[in-house]
Length: 420
Ligand SMILES: Nc1nc2c(ncn2[C@@H]2O[C@H](COP(=O)(O)OP(=O)(O)OP(=O)(O)O)[C@@H](O)[C@H]2O)c(=O)[nH]1
Ligand SMILES: *[C@@H]1O[C@H](CO)[C@@H](O)[C@H](O)[C@H]1NC(C)=O
Ligand SMILES: [Mg+2]
Image 1: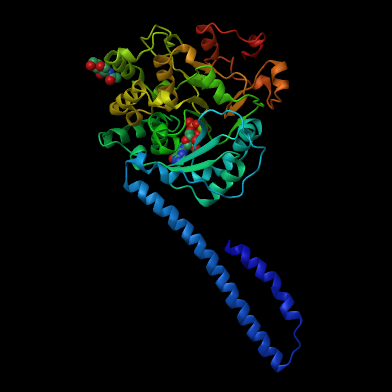
Image 2: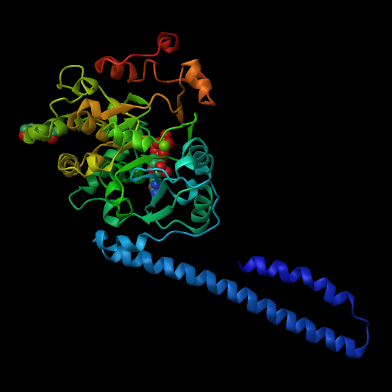
C-alpha cells in the first residue's frame, strides 16, 4: 500500500518543477513546494505503514490468543474470518452442495508450488462449485501467501495455525531413542529418515488435521498438496458423489510402502485390534492390505497426498482410539510411520469395503507418478492433459490391480497393455 501511494506522488513531481523560472522568489516557492511535497509524501508513507502494522498486530493478537489457549473449540470463531483480497469471479453456483472443503497443509515457501496446482483444481473442478479451501501451517501464513491463494480460489479461503501440541514431540517420547532412529535412518539413506518436521507432518496428517477448528463445520474434505495436478475435467460434484453413494474414503493412486519406515506398525495394529475387535468392520478390506489373512502387512496403501474422504471417519471412536494407541507406541518418532499406511490400514479395517472408492477418472499427478485414464473415449472426452503410457495404475509397483481383484471390479478393456 505504501509503495503504491509513493509512486503515484512521484509521477506528479516533474510537472511542478518544469513550470518554474529561476528568480529568488521562484526559488523560495520551489523550496516551499518541495517541502510541502516531501511532507505529504512522508505522511502518505507513514499512513500506509501504519495500516500494515495494524493488520499484522491483529494477526499477531489472534495467533497469540490461539497459542495461549489449547481449548481450540472455543476459539474456532476467531478463525472464521475471510480474507477480502482481490478474488477471481465466477458464475455463482446456487445448486445443492455438500458440506465440504479442500484442505492443504503447507509452508509459506510452498506458495509457488501451489500456483499451478490450485489453478488446475479450480479450472478442472472448483470454479463450477466454489467449495471452500482451508490452508493449515505450523507457523502463521504470510500476507503474500494469503492474498495469492485468495485470488486464485473461487470459494471462501481460510488460513489456520496448527496448535503447538499437534506439531511437537509428545511428553512420553524418549528423545535419545528418537534421535538414534534418525541417525540410523540417515545412514541407511531412508528418504526423510533424519527429518523431524517430516515426522511432525506425518503425525499431524494422521491424528490432527481433522481436529483443527476450521474443519469443524465440514463433513468431507479433499486433500491437496503443492506440486500436484489434476489432469482431467471433472464435471460432477465429487463431494456430493461421496455423500450420495455413502463413500467414506476416496483415492486415485495406491502403492507399496517402504517397509523400513514402518517395521512395527502392523504388529502394533494387531495388538490394537485384539484389544478392540469391535472396531473391525464385518465387511472390511483386509485382503487388500494382507496376503496372508492378517498375519503380515503387504505394504499396500492409498497414496494419501490425494484424499477425498469423510471427516466423520477420522472423528469416529474407532479411528480416534486407533491413532491414540499408535501415538502412544511412539512409532511416528521411533520409526517413521507415514500417514498413508496409517490412514489406509484404518480405512481397510474399520470401513465397509463398499465405503472405499477408487477415483479412476480424475487424472492426477504427484511426482513421480501419474494417474492418466487409459480409456480413449474417457480421456479425450474429459480433456485429460496427460499421456496414458505414463499411467501408474496398472503397473507392477501399484496396488490397484490387487484392489480391483479383491473387490471384483471390472478393469478397463486394455489394462494389460499398460502393465509396463
Ligand atoms: N506447514 C508445514 N507443512 C509441511 C511441512 N512439511 C511438509 N509439509 C506439507 O505436508 C505435505 C506433505 O509433505 P511433502 O513434503 O509433500 O511429503 P511427501 O509427499 O511425502 O514427499 P514429496 O515426495 O517430497 O512430495 C505437503 O502438503 C507439504 O506442503 C512443514 O514442515 N510445515
Ligand atoms: C504386542 O503385544 C505383545 C503382547 O503384549 C507384546 O509382546 C508386543 O511387544 C506387542 N507388539 C508391539 C509392536 O507393540
Ligand atoms: Mg508431497
